[in-house]
Every structure is written in structure tokens, then in C-alpha cells.
Image 1: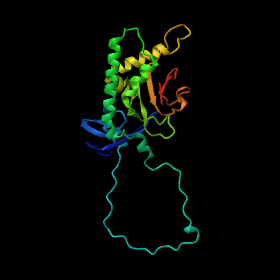
Image 2: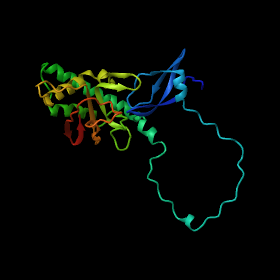
Image 3: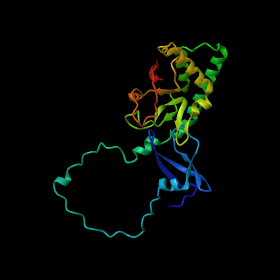
Image 4: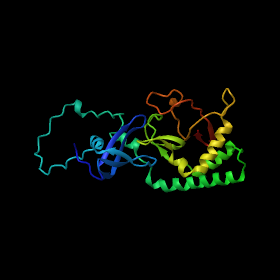
Length: 256
């Protein structure tokens, strides 16, 4: 079994999410803590040393310093002189690009925008009654405070490119290695979550028995076309139950 040390890189496949790489942060007894490289930071996951050893990314050996002997160039035929056709295959690092975190230079702008959204939501809640619901226009006005600088998510199951896309999920999520939990967006921005929930409850249709439409999560997509897998969930999907799409627009496409 390979020896695990702090700082090692491990790689693991999570069904429904894709392949992620993480860094070993600490080791205690027979377990270690691994922090995964995600678009939205997650709490570290506990792995056994045996499991981490199976996921360990081996380091490449340094190149040899021996001088290579020169070999005569092979003779080329007339066919070899033709220009090679460009390949349409994905680049070798396509999977890494799909799981790469958002641009670090935009992280501060994203946080600034989310603070403005949270402040707007807090003011709206303080000025309205408990049973009041925001209009679609007010929801658009709130989300426009992000100024197009949205958080990004790795959602290879619903995109054509597999690259991170702008959006956020409020409510219940399935965290990598942690199971069901409240999303960090909702934990850090509870007032924004309340405003979105109020708008959805006022907009969604009632059930046949007249009850409110039940839901546990709100996936907010911004300016990209999501594949309709939420309506017919595949076996590996975490979607359980009925989904209902809503759209609020203001120049660019925003959907919930």
C-alpha cells in the first residue's frame, strides 16, 4: 500500500458528479481529511488511509538527464507532406477543466454581489409581512445585483460541454462524501433563500389536493441552456420526485 502524506493529491469518482481531485490536509491514526477542488468549497471528507492510497495520484518521475542520441530523420513520402487534419476531440485536460474552480480573480466580485443580494433580501423581508411574496420583477431586481458575476457549478450531467456553469443551488444538496445537507449558498445567504422560496411558493401551482407544491431544493441557472434531464432522471441522478421549471428574464436567461 502506498504511503499517504499531507499534501498528497487523490482522485475519486462520485456517481452523478464526476471525477474530482483533492488534497490531503491532515492525517490522524488510520484516517485522513481530504479537501476536494470544487467550484463551491465543501467541508473536507474523511477517508481511510487504505481508501486514500487507492485514489492516490502518483507523481511522474523527473526526466532523465542523459543526452539522447541523434537518429537520422526518416524519409518522407509525398503523402506525408499533406497538412494533418485538425482533431475535434476534447483537450486532454477536459475533465480537469470541467471540475476546475471558478476564476480566482472573480471570486471577490462574486462575494461582493452576493452580499448586495443578501442585503436587498433582508430589507425586503423587513418591509413586508410574513405572508407577502415578492413579484418576479423584484426577484429579477435582486439577482441583477450580481452584475453577471455568478457563482459557478460543476454540472457535467446537464451541460453539453461539461465545463463549470453559472448558477447556484439553495436548500438541500448532496455534498461530496457528506450526504444530504444544506447548501453553502443557503447557509451563508439565508435571506436571499427565503425571498426565492416565497416567490416560488406564490408562483408554483397547487397539487390536486390543493396543497402547496412540495420541493426541497431551488436550482438557479443563469444564461445557459440546461439539458432536460431533471424531468426524466437517469439512475445515477440525485433527483428524486417531480421538478418544475420557472423562468424570470431581464435581457439574459435566468431560470429556477
